[in-house]
Length: 300
Image 1: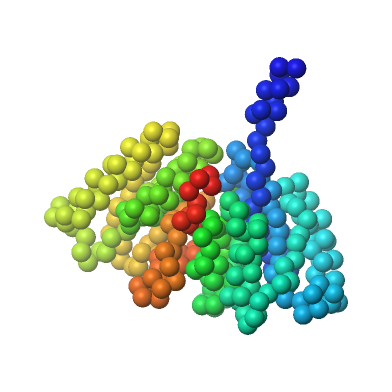
Image 2: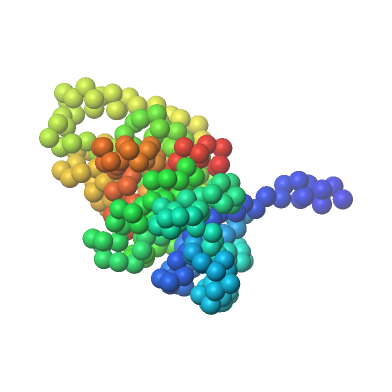
């Protein structure tokens, strides 16, 4: 009786992640790879993936198209043959003007999206140049969601497991908050974390640059914080001849990382005015990208 009681008390609560799907461009093998990778990132947790397809049906769920999507969803979930994937849902109530922003707004307004510890999405299958155009579903989700996001590149293979995580930083307070969450997750799954900072090659001088010395001190502080969580951090500060996003991706590929994790865009206006490294990394990275958002605190 005592053992049974302890087992009940230590049983982990399953958490529901929202998994956005496009039934018109779905590849079952790619979907299985997303399941495998997400399960690896949260292998210490009991998680359930809730597939959701956003589809505007003017007949309110009574049209032949809706019936077709329903049958396709059932077939897809059956083919995935995953115990942690729930029955697919179709969101049909899209407000005017029925564009991509309206679809994302409708998705984020659902109770599941508001409470989801993670929203999973994939970039569309197009050429590298056009697959992530302004106004796409993935980009709009990135700019508007306050929930944590996990993006997969539809055009490249998904790593089989999460063994190492590259965390690019600008040493801001927002980045430090995201870093703490990343470290906690790495600690839970015994993954390595590579702390990366790229500086402009034209202004980089390790012996003279005051900013470089400040960053070295900040790096030491971050490493000390991670050590208290049992995570050993490998810091890298280097001069980058290219923009920050390209440098981050090249570094992650060079180190054979499984995942890039970084803080989110603060606001869409900030992106318009100054550009966003996060946005560029999600656009260009062949690796999965975990975007830690303002509402991530307490989620993990």
